[in-house]
Length: 103
Image 1: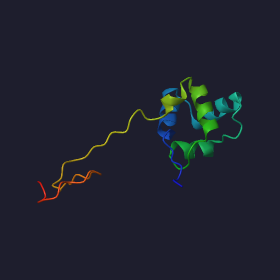
Image 2 (image 1 turned 30 degrees about the vertical axis):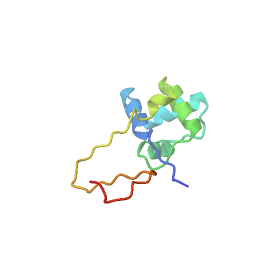
Image 3 (image 1 turned 135 degrees about the horizontal axis):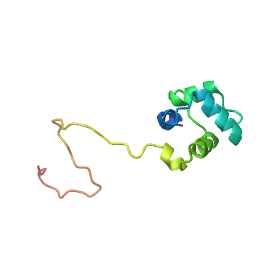
């Protein structure tokens, strides 16, 4: 089973900094909304990507920042690579006609 990963921590930290809130301020706001299990230590671990946020925590983050839950997640991951000299082969399920291999 794959390990849970945290992809919203950096966005949570960014939104918190945009509002000039400390971690303790954000925890206080979350407590007012009913997220009583949030502590400054838990928030610090989420923001620094050391632990994943639960579904319920994501809902509370979206509510406190007045954004949709989807906005907490990265828009799109881009693959950046370079072309390297490789011998590429095409694999298909169709059988090739018998005879010499085609290049």
